Length: 361
Image (cartoon, rainbow, N blue to C red):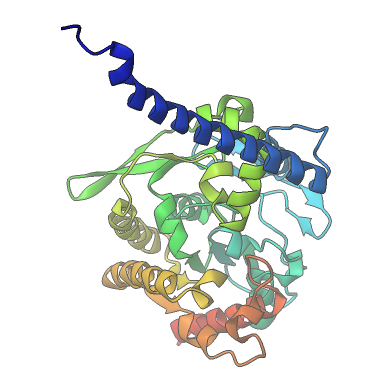
């Protein structure tokens, strides 16, 4: 008896593969039509840039205009830089207005990330500028956009040559996460490894910011050209890691232990400089919009403040005061897009001034 033809056994498999092929082709064609339709709607039908590369290039050009490479910090403000609403002095501090005529003693040094620096506001609308006006004491704004808590502590140590009488060390919870990174927003940075009961500084001297063209992964070199993919990620608010050029060196969560140990360096800084250190907790606007996010941010913040308190440092948590803000928009009304507006910075400065007054008693 002749065995069944091979084609009879294979036919169901071939039909299944054919169906899968039709589905795959349909999906590809549909995505292609969506891509073309969105491009026509947005005006990109004849323009096919790599959106990831464009975003990273724009960021690099902006940051390299106002910042310079620094072998210890990764990057630092460019001395005597000036643009609309933003200016730095010869020492790389953001200007806070004319020093008070009656100011005596050492200045107040403010260090931190973009919330101290004052992104989205002009020189005189930052909280260090408001603090200077409130206290009548000269305030040095040493905040730098994008800094992790590790860079903030290192900047405070380097700026102690200006002999401050008080040092305000500000942070948001994301600064703790940034201590887990070797590269953040396309810029190389120093980082610390846990070693025994202490820390070891790594990646110094810090390499210069890499050319954005060398930082794209396979998917960014391919899907980076898709306007559809870009459109979807924007609507899902998932561009942070897609556009941002970040290289992690520590597992998620380890930054909390690193940041805690960094308070020991602040304790040493307080002792050798004879300048009282105040650790200030600030919050980004998502805290007032997402309860789950807020709970995690507050947990991380409370942990770092507890570490600072155990080291004999003064601490200030701005959360409760911000939460009580009763304007129409609630606490969100104290912010611009991502950072505090002039009103939010004035409120923060008031809290800091009150805390510093307690130190002087």
